[in-house]
Length: 403
Image 1 (spheres, rainbow, N blue to C red):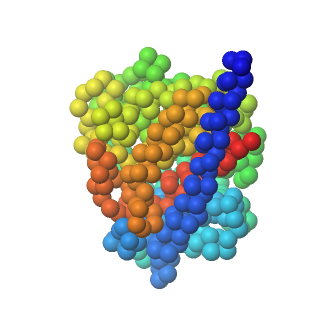
Image 2: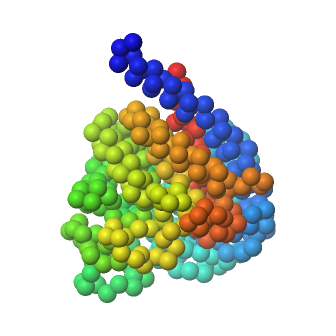
Image 3: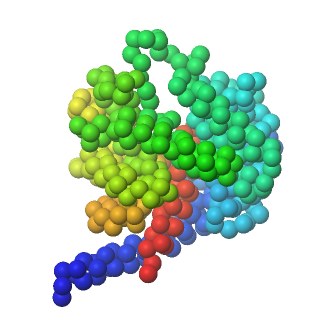
């Protein structure tokens, strides 16, 4: 048998092996994750969603965090648009959107960080990610239930993000200007994905003009070739900052961003960009993998110094499910066997440690050894977003491998 035919057969076997897992991801999404949020998070009295839910779905705190409200609206409208037009999913999205419209913004149009259950402002709009996910929410909802009001909310918020992006904390910024001005990776990363979510609202031409800028920020400014890694913070000129903030690596952020970049590369038919993103993702995963206990570290110092974040060695749900998306897409787009090997390794760790074997939804926080640290299913930071989005993306990507 010729080498080329052996290679072809190996690739076919890998495709078949990975594709066989597609149904597992779909089933978990449709039958175990979305029903959990449908059954437990809706606030029937005040509107919006409760996100602080214990292992069984009981509400343990009633504060409402606007970025999680937006994520919930996006999730249910997205699933309605892309999986099945279930009326209960659309009604769930509209339920959250009505609450957001009524209470979510200040007079300048900035989205608060958190509200009381009744909708009274609790924490000022210091966090632009409330705005990012409000934009995603109303853009997606406009696809599910077309409405000029939703379009306008999405556009107004998107434009506000662009106006604020170079100093997005504004008056809430604690840093003294001019001493150590750092750029943060989170917003350019999200804009890679957000621009595509907005395409049907702002048009392909606007998105196409925006894409090169965000790719440059991610791949040329925050990516440090000498390290082979993407940093969370760099100096204004893109150079390395030797301080706590400048040395920090968040493997999950970098890996998640690389599947956004791969999506952009696919859109642009740019194989070199896809390959570069895939290699950075694999390098980050190799660097961030806990060789002793397995799993991906939350934070690391690229010079090996103690981290500022005391939770640095925890294993978090979103980091692992986003890695699964990146690895699935990396394999589908490049055929790189390293992606398939890593996918199976991360898949096994994730499903064995984060999935609750007795009740719906997954645990979010493990200690370094992979033991459940908090048995909550939702809170201030974990809501209806990373797991359903990732399950959907992996399902569709693996399904596409079927011959």
